[in-house]
Image 1: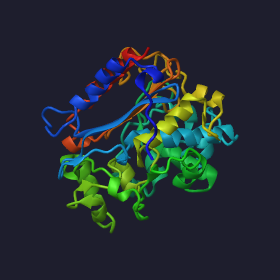
Image 2 (image 1 turned 120 degrees about the vertical axis):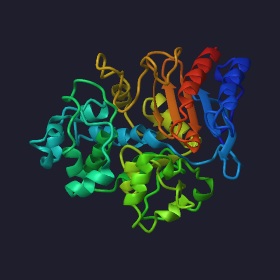
Image 3 (image 1 turned 180 degrees about the vertical axis):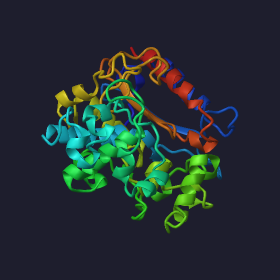
Image 4 (image 1 turned 120 degrees about the horizontal axis):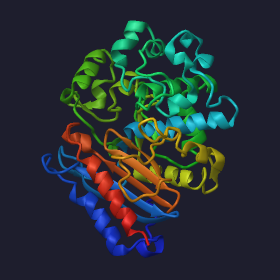
Length: 396
């Protein structure tokens, strides 16, 4: 059942200006990879809990030209970092199982004596741990004999706390920590504590060792062919012996029902940096929960103080503004020019993004399948800024 869309005026938008903003998304959608930013998109716009727009445009897949629907299920890529990993760590903080100043070495004695052992939970969440943005785990895990070993042996690019370097590796480590402290799998903890209470029925990891849920399978979107990138080719070579590999790729090469991110795929589809699949409607519930101080309907996920903690600026002067997990407005970022300084959000490599502005009550979800044109097509970066600018200008 689709959420009910109210009139733009009732939701706090000028109808004509909102239509102009939505046209930004529509006009950049299409089948021409030389002209368009993505084949298709789903957009959600709400203000103060009132839904003003919920629409799909373009194509879900160019092969063979399937129209996009609002209920299509996207690989949300690095939105996993905030929807899953950050939220899980904040829950553990509330329950007294960790603090932001706890060091990695406290939880993982194997890290003691290594540089990463001195980094704190705060450093990992704010991307200031010094860990590199990318470590080829499909190469390093076999070399070091395990995932934790591969991470702690990764040379730091900077001393912890000295500068921001966006790091998938740090969030993979955080997911290991959640599993260790809860004693259960990362997906199971999140389903019970976050996704089920919020009725995010289509939000899930798709591990290689479990079948894809039947209700999700027909709505999944493909991403980027593995042969399109060096990392994709390297991953495919390392995964040839996995019996599920071919079943999760069309023609043995186009991912469908397996995470695009090479490290998350190597880890079996479940990781702290990527791996989550979701719909625009589910992500809107999550975003409204954060906008409402941790509560959505009858479900309270987080305390308002925790939400405030996560969305303040922890990295002023370190190169980029970051909250705990969340991105904050910075020069050249996806936020555009007109949202308030209190806005927070996140984007994903596959072309996904979500933004919330507590000052105006604005919620924006924009999910695209831009990787079907290949990762070299980065037009979506500009589309996000144009869309958010026009939405901010349409509020009354």
